Amino acid sequence: MTTPAAEVSPRKVRLALAAVVAAAMLLRIPAFRFPLDQDCGEYAYCAQEWAAGKLPYKDVWDHKPPLIYLVYRGLFAVAGSAPGTVAGTLRVGSALCDAATAVVLFLLVRRLFGPWQGVAAAALFGLFMGMPGLQLMAFQPENLTALLATAGLLVASSYVRSWRYSYAFLAGLLLGLGITAKQIIAPVAIVAWAWMTLATLRDSRFQITDSRFDSALRTPHSALARVAAHTALMAAGALLPFALFAGYFALRGALAEFWECTFTYNVVYAAELRKGGLVDGLRRMVVAKVFDHAALWLLAAAGIAVALRRPAPPDSKSQRPDSTPHFASRTPHWRGGALVLLGWTAAAFLGLFLPGQFAHYYYIPTIPPLAAAAGVGAVALIRLARGQPLSPPGRGQGEGLPSHQASTLPLPPPSEREGGTAIGRVVAVACGALLLAMLAFAAKRGYGEYKLTMNAEHPNWVVARLAKTLGMRTQPGDRLFMFGGRPQFYVLAGRQAPTKYLFNFSYQVPLAKAYLFRDQVRSEIMAGLKQHAPPYIVVAITEKGELDGFPELKDYLAAHYAEEQPWQAKVHKPHTYTLRVFHRREGN
Image (cartoon, rainbow, N blue to C red; front, side, top):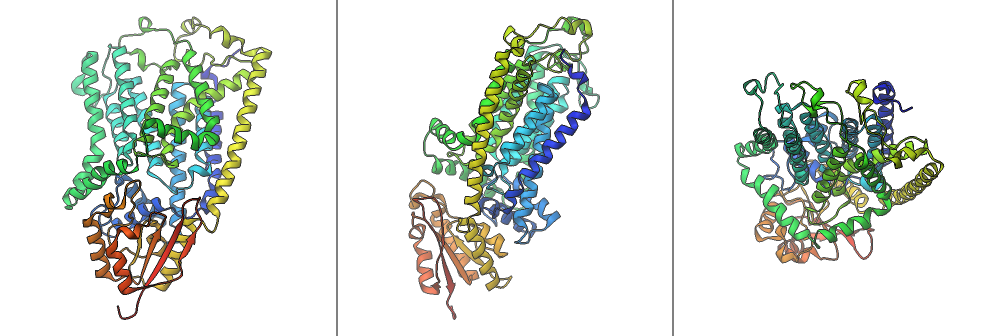
């Protein structure tokens, strides 16, 4: 006999969730040895300068939305930002962010499918997020977007259950905060709105229950009126974070720079990076992740299939008082949950390709929806191996209904009732063995990624040693300049840059057409160099020959600096990466 979800021990579920979160945190310990990467070094420098009284965008040029700098400021306010502790502080922040995402994902999946599906989803999220390939960067904005997207959808589910308008506003606020971490979360906001809207159109009998927020609206509403109301509230919540940040920078005379960096340049950035269309980006993503995450993809597909085949709970409107909407019950609709996960996954993958290229950390926001679906698949596989139906009646079906109604619930399909046969057990064991083999292969690849990152000749290690060396050779008031990239150099050296431009990349376009090689940018960089006369200038050279696109800097180095022995980094062929070091001649 199947144990109803109501009889599932909450204590056991809480202990299992706590064990999952603890294991996920432990899995990240090896990554604490990784050097600080260029992106997170850039955000850290922006946060440090902001805390010192300067402004992002105006005094420190970067194109990310501002929430990541604000989070970094909070971390540094608690743990400090000394060169030797920055990387560890950021990794602690990233681990805590991922742990919060796992807990919120558990709450969402528990509501949609059941408690053990939620625990499995949290476990799979922690496992696949902890692999070295997604831990190369210390704390990316994508970690924040994953948390805020999951939280926004959880609150959207609360709206669907209660019809309280305050939840519509809060869902928009969380998703709007996610957009101020990185714009790629925007498609997920559309999915949340579609979920709320379709649920509203499906059941038009409403009674407002929010005693404060809806005190002036205590009358039944038509479906379209309610859709208009929750759309307006959700949009207001989504726009509020951006409006607050825009107002902050406007009051400080930096609105034009804020808009240029967060919108104008990002459009150019995507155009400069774009190597092909959406199909090409999907192909590159599959090639990059198929060996690491194939088990997650297969489990997610199985979970979606199981949920879509689950019989819908009976429409019990006739047995409910008018004051209790059907969607406000505690009877999850597995098929509806599967559609939500499908939409969420599609939106996350769309956001993955909006920047115009594939990068490993762009993939992070797709992990929560995949883990949610995979959690359903994992529990179904375990039930099949134990001779139980794939999706039993319980929290997913019948909870909250009187016993005489629960007894009338439709049985699972015949194929699911046959899950206890010997064939079913053999299939489950074979699938489990295949998945374990895929995980073992992914672990082997992860160890290879770990060794590659820990190689002393890795560019990030070379930059870290060079930054420490030049930091020891200079005084706290000196400025250092690195041209080409790797802005973590400034954080690790503990020195400021002489210009607001921390990096100069040309991406996929010729140097003459690159946004950060424009005449205005080059003029501002040269003005900063002449004003501060940094004792050392480092030029990062790749096969593109970036210095050839900046003849003014080339002439300035020839006139005032002498070149030292270059620092060579080891990267994947055919790329080269050399750090040319110039010290200022005495008397200049």
